[in-house]
Structures are given as C-alpha cells and as structure tokens.
Length: 235
Image (cartoon, rainbow, N blue to C red; front, side, top):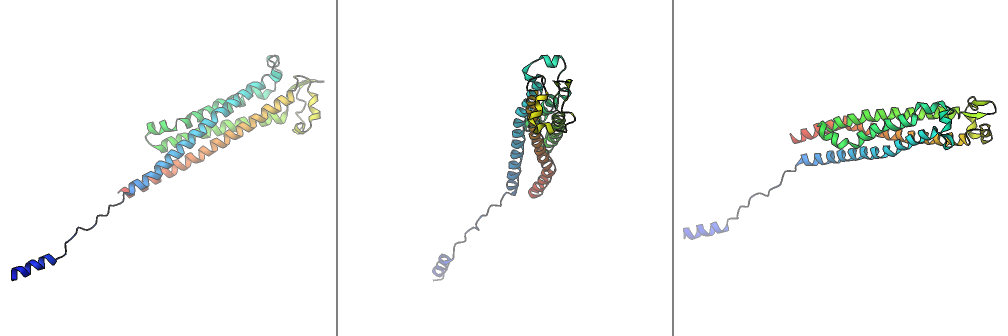
C-alpha cells in the first residue's frame, strides 16, 4: 500500500522545466552600425565634392585662357594688348590647377583611410586640402572681381588704355559707354562674361571646400569620441 501510495505521489509531482533563455543583446554591434553609416556617408560626401570640383576647375582654366584671346584672335596677346590681370592666372592657377589638389584628395578618401590606419587621419588630410581649395578659390574670386571692376584694356580714341579705370564699376550698368572701346571688337562683353563666369565658379568652389572643411573637422574631432564610447560599451 505504501509503495502504491508513493508511486501515485511521484506521478502527481509537476515536471520541472528549465528556465527560458534570454539572449544578451550585443551592444557593440548597435554602436558600430551608426559609426559605419557615418563613415560611409562622410566618405561618399567627400567623393561627391571631389567629382564636382573637377568640372569647375576645368571651366576656370578654359575661361582664363579665353581672356588671352579677345574676339578669338591671337594678335592682341602677342602685342600685349590684354588686361594685366589675366597674367595673374586666377582661373588657370587659383581656380584651376590648385583646385585639382583637393579634388584628388577628396576622391581618394577611401584609399587614404585604409593606408593611414585611422579615419581621423584621412579627415585631417581632407581639412588641409579644403583649406588649400579655399585659398585658391578666394584668389580667383578676388582677382576676377578687381579685373571686372577696373574694366578691359582696349584701344580708344586716346590710344590703348583702361577707359573705365576711374569709373568705379559704373560702366557695367551703362552699356552706352561700352562703345568707347574700338578694338578688340566686343571686348567689354568678352571680359564681363568671362570674368563673371570666373566669379560664379570660384564662389561654388569656395562653398564646396567650405562644406568639406566643416565635415572634416566634425568627423576628425567627434569620431574619436564615438570610438571611446564604443570601447566602453564593449568593455
């Protein structure tokens, strides 16, 4: 009887189940994913700016070269009958060749990040390249503005001179004065158009380099802090 009673009691005992398993979340992955996205966005942004700077620099070079040949003729540059400011090479040098340096740096951001070892090093390099681009675009803008303000060098009834030198730039809004220049033909329109193009291109170059300067500084300064936070979470 006791054995049967003990058997019944054993049958009525509830079965013990193992406690449910709750996986521990991996916070390192949660932290590394935003960092990876920020890295890809910053590199993609820099490369897009590099692609945008190349055509702008090319157009600056072409515009500066065309200033040497008023009315599409070569005899004026041979006789040194062109404005003095074209010899400052604001479009060829400042807005052209100099701008190709930050463009190449921005395009090679991914390779630089791999070879330098840290993204902050690559971002610091982009900051210096952006500063160089700011200097080149500012030089192009200032020289073009001064040349536009002074007016073209042309042949008038009083010989070769700057007829609008003391005009204070008012000739730009007084087309009736443009006829003072006899040769080269349409020299005022030629200079105003090309110099205005240089002003616009250099302004765009300045803005693009400024954007990369801000982006590079933010990433170079803030990213090490993010890495420290990730390390503390992993620890």
